Length: 183
Figure 1: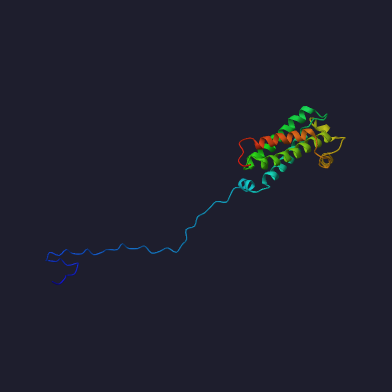
Figure 2: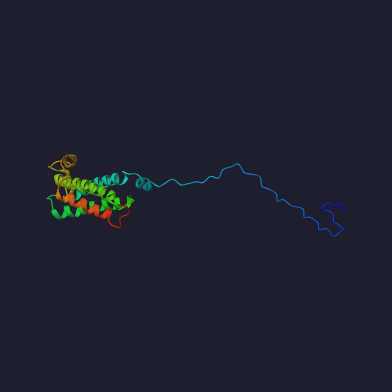
């Protein structure tokens, strides 16, 4: 018995074979998939840089020290120097803590150095200049060294005072407080 084509019905008892159907295939695209990754923020770049926290600590210490040197009273007062030194230590310590990825010595050393520099600049410049809380007329007729000479004096003398080292240790404690991430 001859076979009939699959699309014609067969009158005999042989089963018919189904015709395979194919789905239409979409044409292949030649455009690559582009994934946009946003650039890291400025703070992330500072955190990724090895010298970023140290640079930030030195800049913050020097700037806050210079700004607070204006508040040192004319006759040098120990309590005022302690309070202003604590402010410099806190500013440097929290800056390094915010910018540092770890809580190890890599965060504590920059905090110590930045606070020592800031407190030394603040105390020596403020003590030599001695404007403090004088009136405006007293500020104009300053008889001692000017601000530039006082700053040069601070930068020329070594920062080996007990107060500067204690302020640096306070900043190092602030920067390193918390669980250690790495040894």
